[in-house]
Length: 459
Ligand code: ARG
View 1 (cartoon, rainbow, N blue to C red):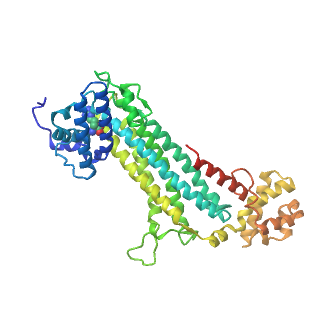
View 2 (tube, rainbow, N blue to C red):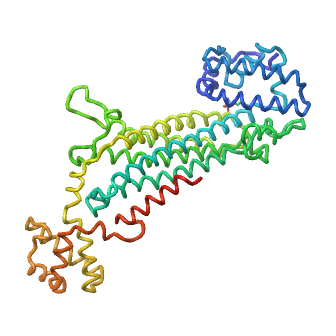
């Protein structure tokens, strides 16, 4: 029997159905159903014979779904209905007992929490692998000078190891964000029923324990309407994707002939259909371009939850496509980033040449004026700006300026001209960055040790 006189309009069915995308929740749906059936029997809400029949039927379903021979029906609205329909076909009327003390509202959010936690843990693993690759490459390139940039203009030389480690720390924070999302998905919604609880004395702790939830959601209304764990995953993924886009962008720039800092591995590069000489950094470009898509899912799902009255509304079905696409995108992007970092080869000479640009020592000369001539930094900055201008205007480098030209800008500096020429000759400005977190080898070594500790520790 149905309360309706008319069948559903086919376009409404298409609008309403989620089976096309929520199929992927079948493993979680089966796990949830098994735990629920065991709990119902333990509380004598169903008989143990019924429980066994249900569990057997669920085993058959699992085989069909895993082997991709599960036959979906035209009328299957979502994976939960499809599984219940097929279960009843297999085990008969007892299949209808599985939904005792359960609603699709608490069922669907339980499946999604299980899925989100699983993928958040997987993302943590993928981020760790990328961090490990960055750390290995940093150790291999400990003392390789390269220019550091601000405004994409050469600013101060740094070691390549230091630059690679910058990404390590970014991704450590991303890993923490994914860990937070996994914890947020750790409260069991099942048992909340449609919204107000169920008319049976269920054992939610038992279900939580079997499914690996750390606690039971304490409020049934919140349990069926809450999706902020999805927002937490999406936020973690969006930030991580944005970090990957910065890495991708640098790989694109660095692998160009203009920079010539690195060559990407063939396995992560593409050719051109017309220009046979080309080796294009398509994967790195896609790291750059995928980020706004993940951020878009976060923004869109905020839109879905915005001002949504409690409790369950069909709007909530829109959680899935945003989440699933974000999961697929970030997992693939993380694998690509790792592949590129593992396989990229850096060009030592080119990096060194670009970082030997004497103008990069401008800050060091200003600091020399501060430390040796007791000038206030702002004044020293002005003196060096003048020196740079004289050098640039006459097409020379800083070390090609004559002592008397130094005197015109700063008599105090002229008195210490030897130190001036020495600083420029020895290019000691990398090792002079001795502050904690700075680029001197000793500090980078410290960072590498700290990074190893961070990788070894639990987040
Ligand atoms: N497919 C639905 C979803 O994804 C399942 C829950 C349906 N519940 C309901 N009361 N209609 O949200």
